[in-house]
Image (cartoon, rainbow, N blue to C red; front, side):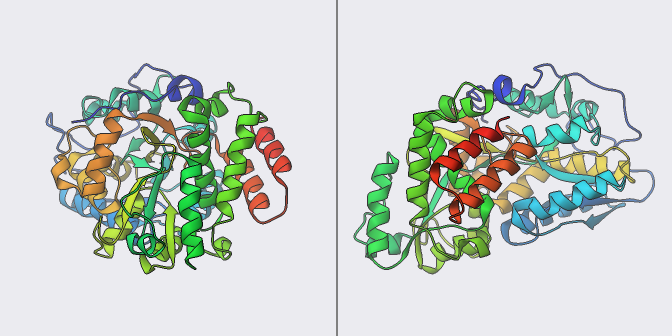
Length: 433
Protein backbone atom coordinates (compact mmCIF):
# COMPACT_ATOMS: atom_id res chain seq x y z
CA UNK A 1 0.00 0.00 0.00
CA UNK A 2 1.25 3.48 -0.75
CA UNK A 3 0.24 7.06 -0.11
CA UNK A 4 2.09 10.02 -1.62
CA UNK A 5 3.96 12.15 0.94
CA UNK A 6 2.87 15.52 -0.40
CA UNK A 7 1.92 17.22 -3.60
CA UNK A 8 4.34 20.14 -3.19
CA UNK A 9 1.66 22.80 -3.20
CA UNK A 10 -0.20 21.40 -6.19
CA UNK A 11 -3.52 21.40 -4.39
CA UNK A 12 -3.60 24.94 -3.11
CA UNK A 13 -1.27 26.72 -5.47
CA UNK A 14 -1.79 25.12 -8.85
CA UNK A 15 -5.31 23.80 -9.00
CA UNK A 16 -7.04 26.02 -6.46
CA UNK A 17 -9.02 22.93 -5.68
CA UNK A 18 -11.34 22.62 -2.72
CA UNK A 19 -10.27 20.20 -0.03
CA UNK A 20 -13.74 18.93 0.81
CA UNK A 21 -15.31 15.94 -0.85
CA UNK A 22 -19.06 16.22 -1.07
CA UNK A 23 -21.70 14.12 -2.68
CA UNK A 24 -24.09 15.45 -5.28
CA UNK A 25 -27.49 14.40 -6.52
CA UNK A 26 -27.54 11.48 -8.96
CA UNK A 27 -27.55 11.95 -12.72
CA UNK A 28 -29.73 9.01 -13.71
CA UNK A 29 -29.35 5.30 -13.14
CA UNK A 30 -26.01 3.77 -12.17
CA UNK A 31 -24.47 0.31 -11.90
CA UNK A 32 -25.25 -1.70 -8.80
CA UNK A 33 -22.18 -1.92 -6.57
CA UNK A 34 -21.60 -4.26 -3.66
CA UNK A 35 -20.00 -3.14 -0.42
CA UNK A 36 -16.78 -4.90 -1.42
CA UNK A 37 -16.43 -2.63 -4.46
CA UNK A 38 -17.21 -5.36 -7.02
CA UNK A 39 -20.00 -4.46 -9.38
CA UNK A 40 -22.82 -6.91 -9.80
CA UNK A 41 -22.80 -6.43 -13.57
CA UNK A 42 -26.57 -5.99 -13.70
CA UNK A 43 -27.54 -3.06 -15.92
CA UNK A 44 -31.15 -4.12 -16.34
CA UNK A 45 -31.14 -3.62 -20.13
CA UNK A 46 -28.44 -3.78 -22.76
CA UNK A 47 -26.64 -0.53 -23.49
CA UNK A 48 -23.37 0.73 -24.97
CA UNK A 49 -20.54 3.11 -24.09
CA UNK A 50 -18.51 5.17 -26.53
CA UNK A 51 -15.12 5.66 -24.88
CA UNK A 52 -13.17 8.58 -26.37
CA UNK A 53 -9.37 8.33 -25.91
CA UNK A 54 -6.10 8.83 -27.77
CA UNK A 55 -4.91 5.28 -27.05
CA UNK A 56 -4.43 3.63 -30.43
CA UNK A 57 -1.18 1.64 -30.34
CA UNK A 58 1.44 -0.14 -28.23
CA UNK A 59 1.14 -0.24 -24.47
CA UNK A 60 -1.61 2.39 -24.51
CA UNK A 61 -3.87 0.26 -26.71
CA UNK A 62 -2.98 -2.83 -24.66
CA UNK A 63 -4.04 -0.99 -21.50
CA UNK A 64 -7.33 0.04 -23.09
CA UNK A 65 -7.90 -3.55 -24.16
CA UNK A 66 -7.38 -4.59 -20.54
CA UNK A 67 -10.16 -2.26 -19.40
CA UNK A 68 -12.43 -3.50 -22.19
CA UNK A 69 -11.87 -7.09 -21.06
CA UNK A 70 -12.86 -6.22 -17.47
CA UNK A 71 -15.92 -4.34 -18.78
CA UNK A 72 -17.00 -7.45 -20.69
CA UNK A 73 -16.67 -9.56 -17.53
CA UNK A 74 -18.43 -7.17 -15.17
CA UNK A 75 -21.02 -5.74 -17.57
CA UNK A 76 -21.67 -8.26 -20.37
CA UNK A 77 -24.72 -6.28 -21.53
CA UNK A 78 -22.65 -3.14 -22.20
CA UNK A 79 -21.18 -2.87 -25.69
CA UNK A 80 -17.84 -1.07 -25.93
CA UNK A 81 -17.54 1.45 -28.78
CA UNK A 82 -13.97 2.58 -29.39
CA UNK A 83 -13.83 6.33 -30.03
CA UNK A 84 -10.01 6.54 -30.00
CA UNK A 85 -8.32 9.23 -32.12
CA UNK A 86 -4.59 9.03 -32.82
CA UNK A 87 -2.05 11.84 -32.93
CA UNK A 88 0.09 14.18 -30.87
CA UNK A 89 -0.34 12.72 -27.39
CA UNK A 90 -4.01 13.61 -27.52
CA UNK A 91 -3.88 16.94 -29.34
CA UNK A 92 -5.86 15.63 -32.32
CA UNK A 93 -8.36 13.93 -30.01
CA UNK A 94 -8.80 17.05 -27.88
CA UNK A 95 -9.51 19.18 -30.95
CA UNK A 96 -12.18 16.76 -32.19
CA UNK A 97 -13.61 16.39 -28.70
CA UNK A 98 -14.02 20.14 -28.32
CA UNK A 99 -15.87 20.29 -31.63
CA UNK A 100 -18.21 17.53 -30.52
CA UNK A 101 -18.87 19.08 -27.12
CA UNK A 102 -19.63 22.45 -28.68
CA UNK A 103 -22.03 20.73 -31.10
CA UNK A 104 -23.79 18.98 -28.17
CA UNK A 105 -22.58 15.63 -29.51
CA UNK A 106 -20.55 14.28 -26.58
CA UNK A 107 -19.21 10.75 -26.32
CA UNK A 108 -20.42 8.75 -23.34
CA UNK A 109 -17.07 9.29 -21.58
CA UNK A 110 -13.78 10.86 -22.56
CA UNK A 111 -10.19 10.67 -21.40
CA UNK A 112 -8.69 13.77 -19.80
CA UNK A 113 -5.67 14.41 -17.63
CA UNK A 114 -6.52 14.98 -13.99
CA UNK A 115 -5.73 18.48 -12.80
CA UNK A 116 -5.89 21.83 -14.54
CA UNK A 117 -6.75 20.32 -17.92
CA UNK A 118 -10.27 19.67 -16.63
CA UNK A 119 -10.81 23.29 -15.58
CA UNK A 120 -12.07 24.45 -18.97
CA UNK A 121 -14.55 21.57 -19.28
CA UNK A 122 -15.83 22.26 -15.76
CA UNK A 123 -16.17 26.01 -16.37
CA UNK A 124 -18.03 25.37 -19.62
CA UNK A 125 -20.48 23.02 -17.87
CA UNK A 126 -19.49 20.14 -20.16
CA UNK A 127 -18.82 17.48 -17.48
CA UNK A 128 -20.94 16.26 -14.59
CA UNK A 129 -20.13 16.13 -10.91
CA UNK A 130 -19.61 12.42 -10.17
CA UNK A 131 -18.89 12.67 -6.44
CA UNK A 132 -21.84 10.38 -5.75
CA UNK A 133 -20.19 7.63 -7.78
CA UNK A 134 -17.10 7.83 -5.57
CA UNK A 135 -19.32 6.95 -2.63
CA UNK A 136 -21.23 4.30 -4.57
CA UNK A 137 -18.09 2.59 -5.86
CA UNK A 138 -16.16 2.90 -2.58
CA UNK A 139 -13.38 4.95 -4.16
CA UNK A 140 -12.93 7.35 -1.25
CA UNK A 141 -11.51 4.45 0.77
CA UNK A 142 -8.93 3.31 -1.79
CA UNK A 143 -7.60 6.49 -3.45
CA UNK A 144 -4.92 8.49 -1.58
CA UNK A 145 -6.30 11.50 0.27
CA UNK A 146 -3.92 13.84 -1.58
CA UNK A 147 -5.16 12.52 -4.92
CA UNK A 148 -8.78 13.01 -3.88
CA UNK A 149 -7.95 16.60 -2.96
CA UNK A 150 -6.28 17.15 -6.31
CA UNK A 151 -9.38 15.84 -8.07
CA UNK A 152 -11.77 18.00 -6.03
CA UNK A 153 -12.83 21.37 -7.45
CA UNK A 154 -15.15 23.52 -5.33
CA UNK A 155 -16.32 20.46 -3.41
CA UNK A 156 -17.01 18.30 -6.45
CA UNK A 157 -15.16 15.57 -8.38
CA UNK A 158 -15.45 15.31 -12.16
CA UNK A 159 -13.34 12.33 -13.20
CA UNK A 160 -12.14 8.88 -12.16
CA UNK A 161 -8.36 8.38 -12.49
CA UNK A 162 -7.23 5.15 -14.13
CA UNK A 163 -3.58 5.44 -13.16
CA UNK A 164 -0.59 7.44 -12.03
CA UNK A 165 2.16 8.25 -14.55
CA UNK A 166 5.62 9.73 -14.09
CA UNK A 167 6.92 12.10 -16.77
CA UNK A 168 10.51 12.73 -15.63
CA UNK A 169 12.15 9.47 -16.71
CA UNK A 170 15.23 8.89 -18.90
CA UNK A 171 15.31 5.69 -20.98
CA UNK A 172 18.69 4.62 -22.34
CA UNK A 173 20.38 1.88 -24.35
CA UNK A 174 23.24 0.42 -22.27
CA UNK A 175 25.06 -0.93 -25.33
CA UNK A 176 25.16 2.52 -26.92
CA UNK A 177 26.42 4.05 -23.68
CA UNK A 178 29.13 1.44 -23.26
CA UNK A 179 30.24 1.88 -26.89
CA UNK A 180 30.66 5.58 -26.07
CA UNK A 181 32.91 4.70 -23.14
CA UNK A 182 30.28 5.35 -20.47
CA UNK A 183 29.28 3.34 -17.42
CA UNK A 184 25.81 2.08 -18.27
CA UNK A 185 24.92 1.87 -14.56
CA UNK A 186 25.70 5.54 -13.91
CA UNK A 187 23.10 8.16 -13.10
CA UNK A 188 23.65 11.91 -13.21
CA UNK A 189 23.10 14.33 -10.36
CA UNK A 190 22.90 17.49 -12.46
CA UNK A 191 22.29 18.65 -15.99
CA UNK A 192 25.98 19.53 -16.24
CA UNK A 193 26.94 15.94 -15.41
CA UNK A 194 24.55 14.67 -18.06
CA UNK A 195 25.96 17.00 -20.71
CA UNK A 196 29.32 15.22 -20.36
CA UNK A 197 27.66 11.87 -21.09
CA UNK A 198 25.67 13.33 -23.98
CA UNK A 199 28.90 14.70 -25.45
CA UNK A 200 30.39 11.19 -25.33
CA UNK A 201 27.45 9.59 -27.14
CA UNK A 202 27.43 12.33 -29.75
CA UNK A 203 31.17 11.86 -30.32
CA UNK A 204 30.57 8.13 -30.89
CA UNK A 205 28.45 8.95 -33.92
CA UNK A 206 25.00 8.26 -32.49
CA UNK A 207 22.18 10.67 -31.65
CA UNK A 208 22.75 11.56 -28.02
CA UNK A 209 19.14 12.41 -27.10
CA UNK A 210 16.20 11.33 -29.23
CA UNK A 211 13.06 13.43 -29.21
CA UNK A 212 9.90 13.86 -31.25
CA UNK A 213 7.23 16.43 -32.00
CA UNK A 214 6.36 19.56 -30.01
CA UNK A 215 4.63 17.99 -27.01
CA UNK A 216 7.67 15.81 -26.29
CA UNK A 217 9.81 18.94 -26.42
CA UNK A 218 7.48 20.64 -23.93
CA UNK A 219 7.79 17.60 -21.67
CA UNK A 220 11.59 17.83 -21.91
CA UNK A 221 11.33 21.54 -21.05
CA UNK A 222 9.28 20.86 -17.92
CA UNK A 223 11.81 18.31 -16.67
CA UNK A 224 14.64 20.83 -17.14
CA UNK A 225 12.64 23.43 -15.22
CA UNK A 226 12.10 20.92 -12.40
CA UNK A 227 15.79 19.99 -12.39
CA UNK A 228 17.12 23.54 -12.29
CA UNK A 229 14.43 25.26 -10.20
CA UNK A 230 13.67 22.42 -7.77
CA UNK A 231 10.17 21.34 -6.80
CA UNK A 232 9.17 24.57 -5.07
CA UNK A 233 10.58 26.80 -7.79
CA UNK A 234 8.83 24.78 -10.48
CA UNK A 235 5.53 24.88 -8.59
CA UNK A 236 6.02 28.63 -8.34
CA UNK A 237 5.74 28.96 -12.11
CA UNK A 238 2.11 27.87 -11.80
CA UNK A 239 1.10 29.63 -8.58
CA UNK A 240 2.85 32.92 -9.40
CA UNK A 241 5.65 32.78 -6.82
CA UNK A 242 8.40 32.11 -9.39
CA UNK A 243 9.10 34.87 -11.90
CA UNK A 244 9.15 33.54 -15.47
CA UNK A 245 11.52 36.38 -16.38
CA UNK A 246 14.01 35.63 -13.58
CA UNK A 247 17.65 34.69 -14.06
CA UNK A 248 17.06 31.20 -12.65
CA UNK A 249 14.52 30.52 -15.40
CA UNK A 250 16.95 31.95 -17.95
CA UNK A 251 19.59 29.46 -16.80
CA UNK A 252 17.11 26.60 -17.11
CA UNK A 253 16.16 27.68 -20.63
CA UNK A 254 19.85 27.76 -21.54
CA UNK A 255 20.12 24.15 -20.37
CA UNK A 256 17.04 23.27 -22.43
CA UNK A 257 18.61 24.92 -25.47
CA UNK A 258 21.79 22.90 -24.95
CA UNK A 259 19.82 19.66 -24.60
CA UNK A 260 18.03 20.36 -27.86
CA UNK A 261 21.43 20.65 -29.58
CA UNK A 262 21.95 16.92 -28.91
CA UNK A 263 18.67 15.83 -30.55
CA UNK A 264 17.74 14.38 -33.94
CA UNK A 265 17.00 16.88 -36.70
CA UNK A 266 13.91 14.98 -37.92
CA UNK A 267 12.23 15.38 -34.53
CA UNK A 268 9.22 17.42 -35.66
CA UNK A 269 8.10 14.63 -37.98
CA UNK A 270 8.15 11.94 -35.29
CA UNK A 271 5.88 10.94 -32.42
CA UNK A 272 7.08 9.56 -29.12
CA UNK A 273 7.18 5.83 -30.05
CA UNK A 274 9.47 6.69 -32.97
CA UNK A 275 11.90 8.58 -30.74
CA UNK A 276 11.85 5.80 -28.15
CA UNK A 277 12.48 3.26 -30.88
CA UNK A 278 15.71 5.03 -31.76
CA UNK A 279 16.98 4.03 -28.31
CA UNK A 280 15.73 0.46 -28.77
CA UNK A 281 17.39 0.22 -32.19
CA UNK A 282 20.69 1.58 -30.89
CA UNK A 283 20.73 4.74 -32.98
CA UNK A 284 20.29 6.98 -29.92
CA UNK A 285 21.67 6.85 -26.41
CA UNK A 286 19.00 8.57 -24.30
CA UNK A 287 15.33 9.51 -24.49
CA UNK A 288 13.17 11.44 -22.01
CA UNK A 289 9.63 10.08 -21.92
CA UNK A 290 6.88 9.35 -19.45
CA UNK A 291 6.64 5.86 -18.08
CA UNK A 292 4.10 4.77 -20.66
CA UNK A 293 7.40 3.96 -22.37
CA UNK A 294 7.67 0.97 -19.99
CA UNK A 295 4.47 -0.44 -21.46
CA UNK A 296 5.74 0.15 -24.98
CA UNK A 297 9.02 -1.62 -24.21
CA UNK A 298 7.15 -4.53 -22.65
CA UNK A 299 5.18 -5.04 -25.87
CA UNK A 300 8.56 -5.67 -27.55
CA UNK A 301 9.54 -8.23 -24.88
CA UNK A 302 12.54 -6.13 -23.82
CA UNK A 303 14.19 -6.60 -20.43
CA UNK A 304 15.04 -3.77 -18.05
CA UNK A 305 18.71 -3.72 -17.12
CA UNK A 306 19.71 -5.65 -20.23
CA UNK A 307 17.96 -4.13 -23.22
CA UNK A 308 17.30 -0.75 -21.61
CA UNK A 309 17.89 1.20 -18.42
CA UNK A 310 15.95 4.01 -16.77
CA UNK A 311 16.50 6.70 -14.14
CA UNK A 312 15.02 10.09 -13.16
CA UNK A 313 15.94 13.04 -15.35
CA UNK A 314 19.24 14.38 -13.94
CA UNK A 315 18.61 16.77 -11.08
CA UNK A 316 15.10 15.42 -10.39
CA UNK A 317 15.84 12.45 -8.15
CA UNK A 318 13.34 12.49 -5.29
CA UNK A 319 10.76 14.37 -7.39
CA UNK A 320 7.84 12.63 -9.10
CA UNK A 321 6.53 14.58 -12.12
CA UNK A 322 2.92 13.48 -11.91
CA UNK A 323 0.04 13.04 -14.33
CA UNK A 324 -3.03 10.85 -14.36
CA UNK A 325 -5.33 9.64 -17.11
CA UNK A 326 -8.92 9.94 -15.97
CA UNK A 327 -12.43 9.53 -17.37
CA UNK A 328 -15.45 11.82 -17.17
CA UNK A 329 -19.22 11.73 -17.46
CA UNK A 330 -20.09 14.43 -20.03
CA UNK A 331 -23.26 16.47 -19.75
CA UNK A 332 -25.71 14.97 -22.25
CA UNK A 333 -23.93 11.63 -22.55
CA UNK A 334 -26.28 9.53 -24.72
CA UNK A 335 -25.70 6.33 -22.71
CA UNK A 336 -25.20 7.41 -19.08
CA UNK A 337 -25.64 3.87 -17.72
CA UNK A 338 -22.90 2.65 -20.04
CA UNK A 339 -20.69 5.55 -19.00
CA UNK A 340 -21.21 4.76 -15.31
CA UNK A 341 -20.36 1.11 -15.93
CA UNK A 342 -17.13 2.25 -17.58
CA UNK A 343 -16.29 4.56 -14.69
CA UNK A 344 -16.88 1.69 -12.28
CA UNK A 345 -14.44 -0.47 -14.26
CA UNK A 346 -11.85 2.32 -14.47
CA UNK A 347 -11.85 2.76 -10.69
CA UNK A 348 -12.05 -0.92 -9.81
CA UNK A 349 -9.12 -2.99 -8.57
CA UNK A 350 -9.53 -5.39 -11.48
CA UNK A 351 -9.64 -2.58 -14.03
CA UNK A 352 -6.69 -0.67 -12.62
CA UNK A 353 -4.60 -3.82 -12.40
CA UNK A 354 -5.34 -4.94 -15.98
CA UNK A 355 -4.88 -1.45 -17.37
CA UNK A 356 -1.67 -0.50 -15.62
CA UNK A 357 0.14 -3.80 -16.07
CA UNK A 358 -0.13 -3.20 -19.82
CA UNK A 359 0.34 0.58 -19.94
CA UNK A 360 3.44 0.93 -17.75
CA UNK A 361 1.80 3.24 -15.21
CA UNK A 362 0.82 2.41 -11.63
CA UNK A 363 -2.65 2.16 -10.08
CA UNK A 364 -4.21 5.16 -8.41
CA UNK A 365 -5.67 2.75 -5.85
CA UNK A 366 -3.65 1.99 -2.74
CA UNK A 367 -4.72 -1.66 -2.48
CA UNK A 368 -3.11 -3.00 -5.67
CA UNK A 369 -0.56 -5.81 -5.34
CA UNK A 370 2.90 -4.47 -6.35
CA UNK A 371 4.16 -8.01 -7.09
CA UNK A 372 1.88 -8.13 -10.14
CA UNK A 373 3.83 -5.33 -11.82
CA UNK A 374 7.19 -5.16 -13.56
CA UNK A 375 10.44 -3.89 -12.06
CA UNK A 376 9.97 -0.33 -13.30
CA UNK A 377 6.41 -0.12 -12.01
CA UNK A 378 7.42 -1.45 -8.61
CA UNK A 379 10.06 1.29 -8.41
CA UNK A 380 7.44 3.88 -9.38
CA UNK A 381 5.06 2.64 -6.69
CA UNK A 382 7.85 3.03 -4.14
CA UNK A 383 8.86 6.49 -5.40
CA UNK A 384 5.27 7.77 -5.51
CA UNK A 385 4.97 6.88 -1.84
CA UNK A 386 8.02 8.93 -0.81
CA UNK A 387 8.93 11.51 -3.45
CA UNK A 388 7.82 15.12 -3.68
CA UNK A 389 4.99 15.19 -6.23
CA UNK A 390 4.82 17.96 -8.82
CA UNK A 391 2.32 18.37 -11.69
CA UNK A 392 3.20 17.77 -15.33
CA UNK A 393 2.89 20.73 -17.68
CA UNK A 394 2.78 18.80 -20.96
CA UNK A 395 0.09 16.46 -19.66
CA UNK A 396 -2.48 18.81 -18.24
CA UNK A 397 -1.82 18.72 -14.50
CA UNK A 398 -0.01 22.04 -14.06
CA UNK A 399 -1.71 24.58 -16.31
CA UNK A 400 -5.00 25.14 -18.14
CA UNK A 401 -5.21 24.17 -21.79
CA UNK A 402 -4.90 27.77 -23.04
CA UNK A 403 -1.61 28.31 -21.19
CA UNK A 404 -0.24 24.95 -22.30
CA UNK A 405 -1.12 25.80 -25.90
CA UNK A 406 0.71 29.13 -25.63
CA UNK A 407 3.78 27.42 -24.13
CA UNK A 408 3.67 24.77 -26.85
CA UNK A 409 3.54 27.40 -29.57
CA UNK A 410 6.46 29.29 -28.05
CA UNK A 411 8.48 26.10 -27.66
CA UNK A 412 7.86 25.00 -31.25
CA UNK A 413 8.93 28.39 -32.55
CA UNK A 414 12.08 28.35 -30.42
CA UNK A 415 13.20 24.80 -31.22
CA UNK A 416 12.59 25.29 -34.95
CA UNK A 417 14.75 28.42 -35.01
CA UNK A 418 11.94 30.93 -35.20
CA UNK A 419 12.90 32.86 -32.05
CA UNK A 420 15.89 33.46 -29.81
CA UNK A 421 16.12 32.56 -26.13
CA UNK A 422 15.14 36.02 -24.88
CA UNK A 423 12.00 36.00 -27.02
CA UNK A 424 11.22 32.46 -25.90
CA UNK A 425 11.41 33.48 -22.25
CA UNK A 426 9.24 36.55 -22.87
CA UNK A 427 6.61 34.41 -24.57
CA UNK A 428 6.64 31.89 -21.74
CA UNK A 429 6.13 34.70 -19.25
CA UNK A 430 3.26 36.07 -21.35
CA UNK A 431 1.54 32.68 -21.25
CA UNK A 432 0.98 33.13 -17.53
CA UNK A 433 -1.29 36.09 -18.26
